[in-house]
Image (tube, rainbow, N blue to C red; front, side, top):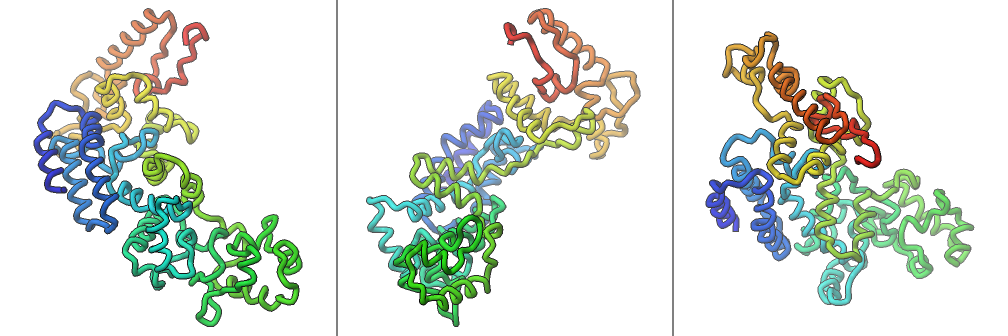
Length: 405
């Protein structure tokens, strides 16, 4: 498979396709094959396999040139400064976690396979596996390669999304290897039959239930106070019974929500790819433009790149400007390819910084004046001469009347 992908990308490398077109080609022609492989083979390919695949696609994106924007940045969402190039590791994890949604909400046509997996888990329910910590590695269920690969992918996904593999209110109380009393997991049959199965059942109004409250809520025999102490003290040995520290990771809550919906693979992949960070050189832009915008400002700037025009070539030009990927005289000097960093296109005798090359240089400034004046004349609305608007695409500077919007 990998050899075939490498050969295909090598043949397509000289085609006159832009970066956006190359990413789209990989999505349409390569990604479906890779996803099929991930969905049919539960075992994880070696790390070198992913490295070679990423290296091959990077060479295709850059036409065998040194990349000016890293692959990890290209793989981010568009509102985070990326181009949504496929992240094959995330797609592998999404394909594996897809089985986890069947554990949380089993369908009738999966019952046979789920029953086989349930036999390996013995008393632990499949739906509880995602909410038990890595102590599961020592449980009999982890000997099943399908269960092991799904759980390993789940733990990796939690790490990617800054979640923690820890005990939460969704964790089971009974047969849980995290809660052992004298090396034996807790289990009280009468409590389980009364409806007490997970840690969330021990809480009410953000506080742990008293013994009297518990007996009334679940109709437990009032003579079982020692069992109540046994359960609470055993759990306290490994985790504090404090609701603020027992909140499940956001990814776990999201997985329970999408377990009954369609397009689950795409939704899981988006959840893994959404980092809530921006990968533009924000600090440099803010320093040069003397701005201190809100947290949502740069996400909107990234989205404007693809809203202002449908022409992919123009979108790519604006994208490269935001990432400051063009080579200036100053950068050439720092790399040792130029004897001076002074701009050769004007008489200002100043360093050819990125802002100078795109805005402050005299010929460039004259160009922007002509552009803004021409647009103002055509639109019958004054277009401000500002680097915020002309360079990074800050459309908030445009406030035309309602009849012109």
